[in-house]
Image 1 (cartoon, one colour):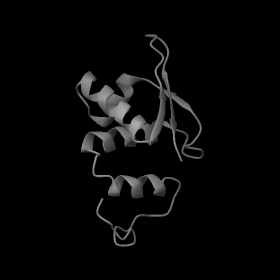
Image 2 (cartoon, helix red, strand yellow):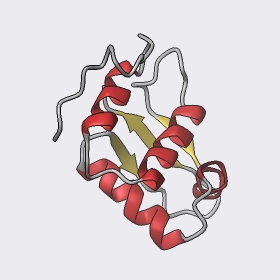
Image 3 (cartoon, one colour):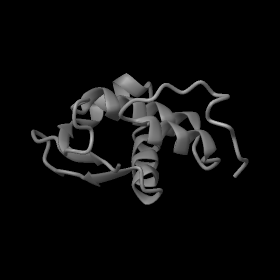
Length: 103
């Protein structure tokens, strides 16, 4: 990982500053990972992003502009493996999956 001066990036201090800093330094992440994470952030409770929330795959795919279900699953699993989120799939067509952003 290449060290960056976060002041140089002009990242505003707010609830998810830690995530943005990690993502800026994490060379494993592709644009689809970042897009999917931003979609997750959009659907979470911005006042308490560390609380679990429910969201559906079609909504996340639409918001993040991911077209392939395989790419979606690969990226959601990698975000879990890399320690950005906790993900519990529902496997039920009418129920949403549960996601928690790891602070």
